[in-house]
Length: 102
Length: 459
Image (cartoon, rainbow over all chains, first blue to last red; front, side, top):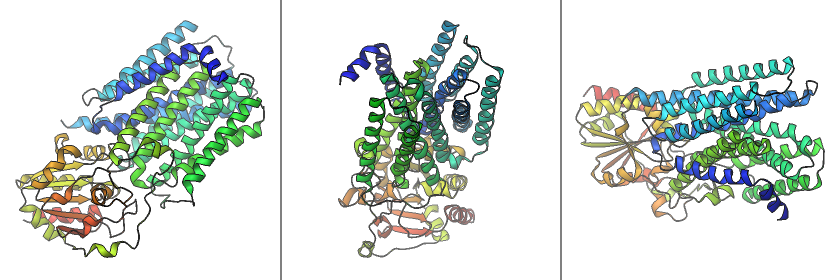
């Protein structure tokens, strides 16, 4: 419990942002029509690839001789980019289909 | 430099929120996706170039190479894959994001060993990332058919819950003791991976939309945790947005299946016990052939088509559009009834039918179509099972009891296209097939519908 309070104390700003972001997320997405469920999921999925920023930071901060960190970072960047590029591209393709006729 | 990067991240964060908002409306969805993608590109470029670190060229080369490799493969898969394979693809990409988060944690662990906050963040990131990765891979395998059966070890609910509690205790131990052991770190990773497998393996296909949106949400949470680790707002907010989106979709899917979120996370999930041997009392089935079915539909006034996963498997989305067009030309009023969890991911049927150019307004959602079934002459069920199973209304012992379904039994006639009498993915008998108003049109959806179209053309 003490550690929890300490965490809040030390990270007050982050805690606020965290809670506000949850509400923003819920407000932005709620009451979305069923027809867009798949594109929303796949678009959100692409967004979760934002973790690539962390993967790049790992590589930037790695010592050029720290092969383990570099290897893990490299794989993390590849997978993150896959998630981002694949996710956005496939969402676009899907939405293209919706658009075509109307 | 620092302020520039922060402004870049701020802009990226705004594009994420705006993009996601726009994704929620049909007219703006495409633009929203592109805006978010542009913001992501900006954040990536900024992270690589906008800083004051002395970086050796070899590292830059490696980063460039990694981005290039990932982009090319990602782009290629996204462009090549068939639309019917969408659920497994989303699942696979999702798993990659989770893996990325777990790997970051592995590298950062020993550097942050003495900071309780940081190491808590790191172990959480590793566990959630690992669960998402292996869980998504299992989901991917199930969806593309390489993992056919639903595997249930005895007492899997109990085993899974004990396992996750064990992982949490183990992680707490690592954080509390500041232990710097690569062995323990990789053991933690392994337990996360195993739990992901245990979690998804027992889940039947019909429950897949819930699992996929839940895994999606978890990846977002893993990204947000990594954001806390680096005190990086774009990762934090981006991750939380995905997490919320995933949870909202998960709850929507749960509602559509009459499950609570708690029962999804802590077991009692996919608990569709097979009810073999109960089908004897249900009566006899009546089978029909394409020509009789075509005659019936030709003289009907109102026809409702109920598509399900079988339609996607058989790639019959174009044939069914042809059938619907043909009927419409003959003056039949045709609609599609879309159950919220038909298929294997949220909105699966909408994407599938959009691919074959079916008009938006022909797709009617469950609440709107249900009152109309009593005026419907013929319901054509193609590859759907659980979403039209009356047991949800009248059999309290059934695992799907209470789930809202399409009330097709209120129609005058029901034609069910199915490959065989095998029970659906969930393994539940469907008494609709034994209803005196029901005729079974056996065969692969594509073949059967093609025959049906040919017969109709001859009339």
